[in-house]
Image (cartoon, rainbow, N blue to C red; front, side, top):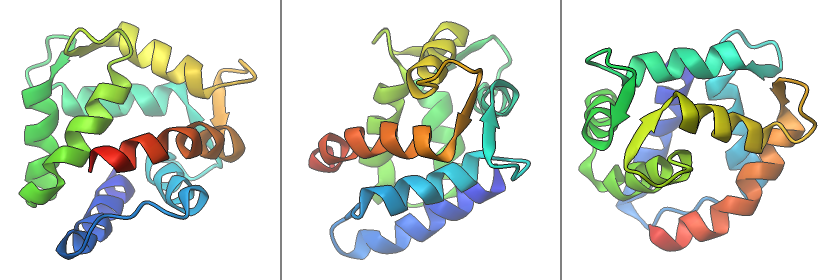
Length: 140
């Protein structure tokens, strides 16, 4: 998780100007390294579950938008990143019910795991985020 925070800190440095996620494959690669906690070149379901537990501050099995934003803004206290955090929350909230739960994380994982081998490699991660980033960038 600390690499994810490092990514966000680096990104926050860009907020003095307009945030530019290009080149998308490079940005996605940095994001991948941040979520690949054990740095084995794969993101396992367990690694995604660990992220969920970090965001779920009250331990109720659900991550509200407020919990998500509080955690990220505590780690990276830069309110100019609020729109980015909001947009990524919306992406993870695959059923659009404004709550992240196990169902959302399962679906999110499945969407990225294009070959359904229950792990996400760099190519899958980059492909997924590179498709989403142009739309994400327009929200910033």
